[in-house]
Length: 443
Image (tube, rainbow, N blue to C red; front, side, top):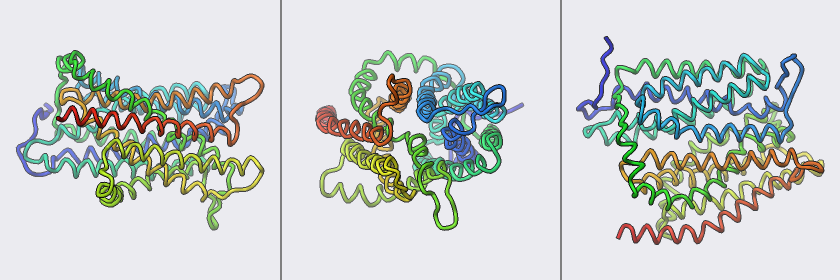
């Protein structure tokens, strides 16, 4: 008979289940980001009809469906949190939805038509999005009072594992697509997701498994304090959603732009979808730089707060997106541009991600009542979903506009750059008002 733990060990050492969680996370993130890295290239170059004929999407159509998929991924955490907190518990939710996740990869690898694409992405959105709120919470469940001081170190490893898996996937999977075809390229992430599920299952007797607390979830939603917090955060999330509308285009419009650029570096021609690997690489490099260098420096001079970090990040995103806009102006004129010109755009956008994404998560967590952390986290993920829905809608509207495509070429990039600038300017008075309310609330 299987024996499972339902409470933490009394120990000052690292929980024995942590290596299985970290191993699972590297493989799972490889599978997700590897699949995602090649999506727009697959849709615009490799998609086939049911009769075996080439049936590619237009660039606008591919971008629209890419962002619709990402929006679905970030909408599903609410579904996953409901399953975990009300029905199955976190462990069973992660295992069950991981199997759904694997079926999605199988569909993409086995069927290169629009039907296979829709089925595969739908299943992956349910799996990847559904387990998103559960995995990090499952990490926290492993720690008791004796070893709680190790939690910060483990979350550091956890975050490194996410970006290491993404970095490797964005280099390897695009190469497989170019040299072995779409089936092999989608099968590799599927194998890694299967490995991730197996590794997680191996740790089943070592994990602390907290059962679902059904009444707690209902009480959270009845608590007026939860809705007051969500009300305070709603305006912030609405503006941060615009940041995500730009940031996630690293995987769509920036890849399609790279396809038209000179990608030779020495004797090696980089693939357009490999350039995305700069983002997780820069994340691994910049996160400690900001934590131990940039933030202490700014704090000594301007009294840096969480909302000021987000504000600076929003303005950085303006400059980041202006770079591909300027590049596209040159491309529209028929002038060849080298891929290294995208590098500063990735650097600035990744710096913006550090200041906006990580800080917004931390700020949300500190604002939420102890009993409703998961509800507030689901609301944060919803802002990512809304940003992607907006970008997808823009691309679908452009593609179906009467009288030809509008916002084509550089005007598309300048539209989003201007939108980001307006958002950053709106965030100035909003952040000041929110900081006053935070001060009053603490008082």
